[in-house]
Image (tube, rainbow, N blue to C red):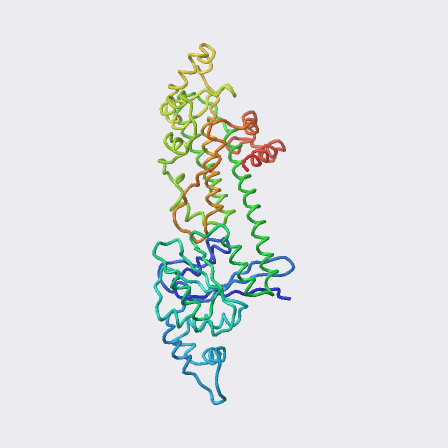
Length: 452
C-alpha cells in the first residue's frame, strides 16, 4: 500500500510553479516568487502529513530553460547494445557530464521526475505555443510517469487554452485541468486531486484523506477566526475611560487603543490563514499604518461600508460624540472622537434636559459607540471572508469582501455583546483584565456563534 505520495511540480521557467504550490499548501511563505525567470534554482520540498504515517510530498523544481538543445542532445544518445527507449535515454543523460554542466538545471528536474510517483506540469496559458514547449513536453513525457497538466493564469484575457490542449494531446497528455493559482476556482483543489487519483489509483486513499483534511482545516480556521473577531468586539465593547467629554487627549488615546486592537485582530487573522502579516501590513490593508482615509473612525468609511447611521448620529459624528443611554455614559462615535461634545449630544440633551446636563458637567464614562463596534465587526468579517477565498499565491492588495448578509449594518449590537458593557474587567484595553473569566469566555463563544 502506498504510504507516501511524491509529486513533482515541473514546467518551463516562470510559469507559476511555486505560486501553484503556495495555493495548494495554503502557505504564502513557501519558496520565492518573482517575475524574473529562474527564481527557483534547486529542488525544494514540502511534506503534508496525514494520519496513519501517510503523507504527500511536493517537489518544487527549477524551470526548464533550454529544452530545444536538451531534446537534440538526448535523442542523439546511442549505445552498442541496441535501441533505447525514453527512460533509457534520460538515465544515460543524467550520467553524462552535460548533466552537471550545460543542462544542470534540466537534470535536476528530470532526476526528481524519475524519483516521483507522478508529475504536475504547469502551463502559463498566456504564452504562445513555441517549439521549446513541444520539446519540453516530449522530454518529460518520456519519463513514463503519470502527468497532470495544469493550465495556469486562465483568468487572463490573453490566453491560448485551445492551442495548449492541442499540443498536450499531440504528446499524449490528456489529463488536463484549469487552475489559476492567483484566482483559483472554488472547487479547484477537489478537481485537481480527483484528477490525480484517476491517474494514480494506488494514491486514491491518500488523496481522499488529504481532501477530508482540507475541509476540516477550513472549518477549524473559520471557527478560530470567529473567536478572534468576537474577542476583539468584546474588548472594544467593554473598553471605557473616565474623562471629561472635551478631553481631546483622552479621546485620541482611546482612538489609538481601539485602532491597535483592530490591528491585533487583523494580524491574528492573517496568521491563522498563513498569510505573511508584514507583507500585507505594508502593501495591502487600508485599515492600518495611518491610512485614515478608511480608518475605523472615519464617517465616510462608515458610509461606504453600508453601516446604517441615525440622523442624530450623522449630524453629530463629525464634530461631537453621542449619548449611550444603555450605560449612562458618553460614547465615542466615528470621527466624533476628535471633536467637542456637540451635535448629536445637543440633540439628545433637548429630550433629557437637566439630567443629561448634570451628567455632562464633570467626568464621564467614555466608551465606544455601538455603531463603531458594528463597523469594526463588518470590517473584520469582510477580511475573514476575503482570506477564506484568497489564494496564497496572490500578492495583490487585499480587497475586503462584500458580505451577502450584513446583520450588523443597522448599527445595533446583539444582546450577547451588549452584556460586555457591564463588565469593564473583560476588556484587555482596561486595567485589571480578567481574561479567563468564565462568563467572558462564554460571551465570546456566543458572539462567535452569531458571526456564523
